[in-house]
Image (tube, rainbow, N blue to C red):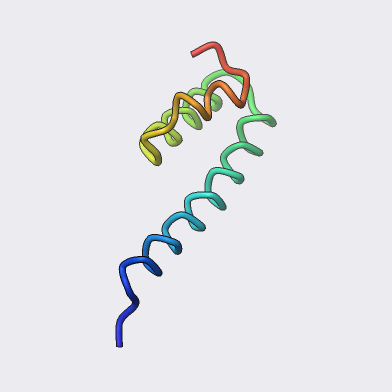
Length: 60
């Protein structure tokens, strides 16, 4: 039997949170073009990317 929609949603959120944490670590340890690439990945990953940019202290 498949998962309920709520369970699927929770799984997606957990995966997104885990991926964002990895991207944040990459962002803090990188410079230049690598940072831009990380920001582009965040933008593609979540619709709330503006808030994440503010939290990470970017000027975008």
